[in-house]
Length: 407
Image (cartoon, rainbow, N blue to C red; front, side, top):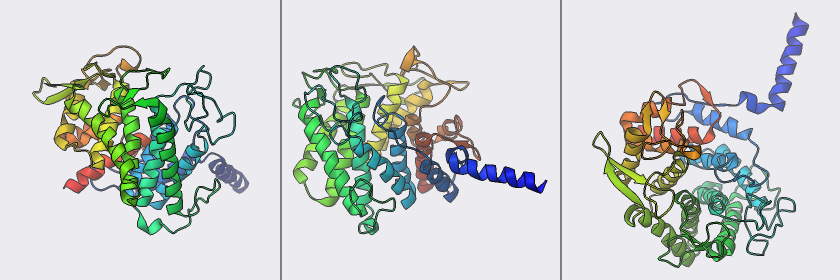
């Protein structure tokens, strides 16, 4: 009996070492009260087991797993301020920077894209001819700038050696690493996105360049504007902290401000009232459409506006966010665990299909509809239970923290 138990125990230990993600899962301690140490520890233990994507094929670093996980780490670091969370974000940012087209060796990098050059981009489909780029280029830049921004806001880390080491020679100290991330994020932004991909000549509104093989001369869809805004916003914050380049900061800020103004005040949305009498929004995938945005892209839109609201530098107020929340609760929530496939309460095919779960971007909205908080969170999470969705959990923690802080 003793021998059998020893063999079983040995197998369990070996299994845990070889497959740590099997046992590491994120746990919800409670829906109310402060974010707990148990919740933060479970998140850190889980993300430590994750492996960053090897490239951006299929938008891995945008709305794919690695992209959403990196954003989740950044948000949880804002919530808990634990160095272990930041260190895992650095691990992912080291990876995404090393995979940039002009820096990575073939087959990941060194591809000539539609511009004719080996640009500082993250191709999402290298089988295309020519290789195209679009809004997905904003997210990798945003990850680098976000991580730089978070480091720069943590003064006590500046001169410390980075815990995970410096295998790519991006900077031995946290401050050095932040400066590298910021420099390379600026490089991607100014040597491809603003140089060739985007045309912002019309009042700083984002259009794709006329010669872009992807949506050339057309307005950038809202979810993709949110990807670019994620980059612009964090680049602004990092340069604001360093006070190193006010001209570049103002350039970035003018573009994100134009994007926000275009949506809220320039014809990007329709306003109305729900059956319950609450103010709601309706908008489309891209201008000039102003209705019927699908649930998938709507979640990405909402997450982008929530990030901008959290940042606090672009004039988005809680009153402006509440109609998004009313839209989700009053219009998209169909009852019996079903959620509409479009923001105007309808359903179709593909991204517009109804779902039996809540897409994680909408979870931010529970802050603005406290009456729906528990029903929204309990749709896919349960107290004492676990999840493997880092983005879902991070957004739950954010709203939980906000509710606790407001009491």
